[in-house]
Length: 289
Length: 326
Image (tube, rainbow over the protein chains, first blue to last red):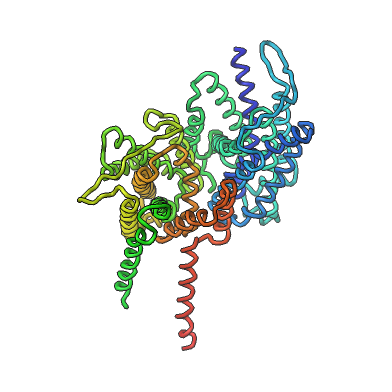
């Protein structure tokens, strides 16, 4: 029982990070119909930036996390303005561009940080011990930061004027234009928010696991699985999908053989896409393409 | 000169040029190798061109089918001594069989979702290549030392003669695809790309058309897998990953989506440019990425497509002027 609870906690931890990564993919897909394969590369770059800021410049972890978050947002803005905005009418071209961006970002990371996996020094030694369960302080911080970011994003989406505009755009793009919502500006904003959250997730990934220039693509794949599970373009579904995938993976790694771990997620993804395209929690109806 | 005669003349010139390549660049050495690799990639780009260019389905699993062809050929040749010439159709059938099974799932998807689904398919097949080491040799892959057997008294063991095999398959697949695209089935494929809903309302079985084009393109990719195996004599999972599929999409897009000559031009540009520029290995992917982005933003119809547009615009202009004057 203790073991199960321990696995659940680990699953929620990873799942929360998956959700942070997937929110950006889902948000941009909901507004533009474009799938950004380079999204995971922002996670990777955020992780490396945090690594450099803490290890080489001695910044506190939370400081470098915020630094990565801001840099990630900036990168998202740059990507959108220099490339993606030319592909609004043709989401497929946006996808192809994002494939080109992956090559650029990976080479950049290889040139700066090399191809060997980098592991950060333990920033917060020690762990909470209670009822036979253990939670390292680093993991506790990750859980809290993830929760704060997700809650903050939720509040922004529900309460703020910009958040309402984003939801209006995702629901009825034409009607949103009629009531005077500047579409381009909000698409750029969604890209900025998405990449900022992804870079923050990268910062926490780097502190928990080792990081290589190639982690981005597998994280993008996880993001797709999460978005497909939760229903494309649905924020609440994405968060639930992230937690579900994290818990499933943790239980799978704990209780089932791990040779084809990645394949299980992909298979689930394929089946959901073809038989339940609105996502497991999605409302009935076709995906907007 | 009538259109038919000029067509025949063009063909004669192209065939003569293809035939003359080894005499010009030498029957052995680096240059003939590049020619073989360009031709192999051009056939591969043809096979993706049917699916992506004509039917508008952007598959990220294409390299996986080419891998299935290569691994099938390697196994039947090493275990049972099957000859090169029999490997070609058998590898095609193997790739088509896997594609037929997968088409049950992927034909339910459209547009971007199709790309995502085939991404998952490509990744899963790569994982099989990595983990099924009894058949695939695992991450290290398989080494392969056989050469094509001589047939009709012709010897195919030298580089130059292998070039002729690849060039012949290139010409045959070009003719086959051109014939296919002029048939009713070809029109189905284009209808699938242009407007699936309208196509369905015209009585076209969209699912069936998508399944057929998916299976056909996988079959041709399987043939190329055999050529790849006999050319490089080593196969490993990384050569058939989603990344290879992405590079193929780039080749098709550089040449021009939905054009016949596009894949050849794309493969030539894509493979000759790095040889000419000789960039360090970390810079090369950056260049590829930048070229990909520039092509999408500036030349969405590719080199051949842009040229066609320019040519048509010129001709229309030439015809319109006298009409206005009259």
